[in-house]
Length: 519
Image 1: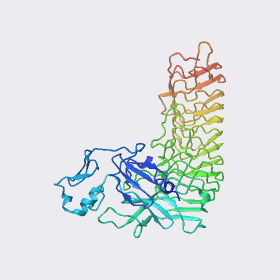
Image 2 (image 1 turned 135 degrees about the vertical axis):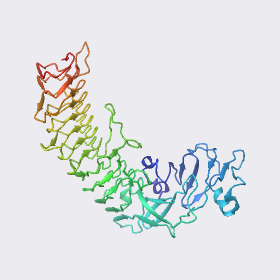
Image 3 (image 1 turned 90 degrees about the horizontal axis):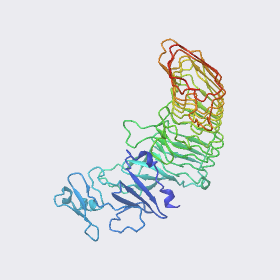
Image 4 (image 1 turned 90 degrees about the vertical axis):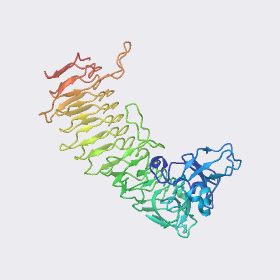
C-alpha cells in the first residue's frame, strides 16, 4: 500500500478552503510521505507511523515545495512564540512572561507548536492518518474523512461509511487536554476507492454526515452497481466545514453503475461526475439543486457566466449513455450551467412548475434537438446563453407567460429553423438569435397582452454583427421573410434585424419606436 495513495488528502480542499476546520492546506505528495502545510506558516510531516514529527530542526532541501516563514505567530493568552532566525538550530524561544511557561509539560508542547487548554492553538491542525475498521481516515481535532478503503476481508463487496468514528485504541495522538476521541465523518477523499480492480466493491452506503466527495473518489470502480448518497449535502448555519460537493469525476469509469439517486440538496458540483459510466442511462435532478453551483475543473470558483466563456466540461459531460435527464416535478429553477456539455441527450421535458432556465443551463448540448414545455408552464425567464451552441436544436417554442429571453439565449444554434414567442414577451435580449442562420420562422403567438408594455428587442437580436464591406455578412439570417411585432414591444434596436437579407416585410405597431431599422 503506497502511502501517497492512502493519504491523497480526503477533502476537495479547493472548495472547503475558506471555512474548513482542516484549514487552508496545501498538499505535497512524495513517494513515502505527505507534507501538509497551512498558510505557508508551518508544516507537519506525516509518515507511515501516522504520528506527527517536529521537523523544525531539519533543513529543507533546495527543491522543497515548502516556503519557510520567519514571521512570528501569535498564540492566545499573550503567549508569544518567536522564531529566532539568528539561531543556527532554529529553536523556539518562549517569552518569560508567558503564562504557560510555568508548566514544563506545556512548554514541551509549545515547542512542538501547540498548547493545551481544551482546544488546539497551533496554526497547523495535527492532521493524522489512522485506521478504524475497514477504512483509513484523515482526522483532526473535530472531523474525519475517508482516505482509503482497506477491508480486512479481501472478498468484501460492500463499504458502509459511518457517521462517527472512535479513535480510542488507535495510533492517534491528541493534542487536546480533554478529548472524547470521537470524530464526525464529513468527507470521502480524492481517489479513496480508486483502482477498483484491486477489490470487489459493489455497493456503497454513506452516512448523512458526509458532505464532501472529493475528485475521483470512486474512479474506475468497475464492479460498483449501487451507491446510497446522503440525502442532504449542503452547508447550514451549524456547519463549519465549508460547502457540500460532489467533485470532479467522482464516479468516473464506474461502468456497472446503472442507477443513482442524487442528494436532495447540494451546494456545488464538479465536472464529469459520471463520465464514462456506460450503464447509466437516466438520472433525475432533484428540486433542491436550484442553487447548486457548477464550478470549474480543479478550481474553487464557479464558471464565469459570460458569452465568450467556454464551458469545457459540465457535471454530466462525457456521460455517453446518459440520454434521459428528468427534473423533479416541483422544480422551480434549473441551475446555471447544470447540464452544460451533456452531449448525449436528444430531448428534455421542462416541468410545468419551472419559472427560470438558468444561465448556460444547456450550453453546448450538441445532440439536443428539442425541449418540451407544456401549455400550463409557469416559465417566465430563459436566462442569458441558456441554449448557446445547441447546434442540433430545431425549434424553440415558449408558453404564454414567458416574459424574458436573455442575452444570447440561442446564440449559435445553427440548426434552429423556427421560434414562437408569446405576446406576453417583454424582452428579447441582445444577440438572442445571433448566428441562427437556418431560422426562417419568427412568430409572436398567443399570450397575455394586458398590462404588458415597455418591451424591447435588443441589439442584433435576430441580426448579424459581422458585416464586412468587402464580403458582406458572415452569418446572415437570410431565410426570415416576414415578421409581425406585437404592441408590447415599444423599443426595437436599430440593429435588431440587421443581416436579415431576405426580409421583405415587417409589421410594427404604432407604439413601437426605433431609429432606422437596418436590414
